[in-house]
Length: 136
Image (cartoon, rainbow, N blue to C red):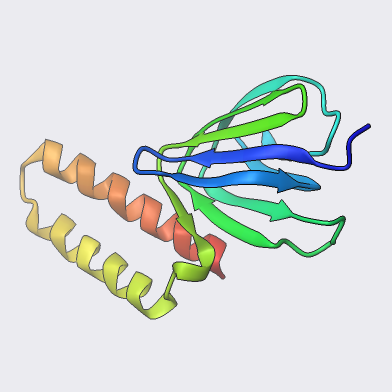
């Protein structure tokens, strides 16, 4: 069995990660799961949460990414996450995030009777709150 699995994290904007990992954890809609080399083939939907990449057998993640949802596929020795939105956790500033949440709440209050705008703002607010929850 190989020591690593090839991992790719893709968002609509960019390929964020393409490399080798000893383990990757992901927030599946049915629960968090870990992928190691030799994992059985799997397809899963993702809920908002953290994808953690482990290298060299370490028990601490080398990198963490927030995903707002998407799909995960394990095939042979490759694990691919297609994320709706993906953000490296080391680029998240808590104070900025809290201000973004406050702005979204104010925009939601100002939306009035525009249901499309309310729905879009509620989705944005939910994603920001999920990101804040994962950020800790």
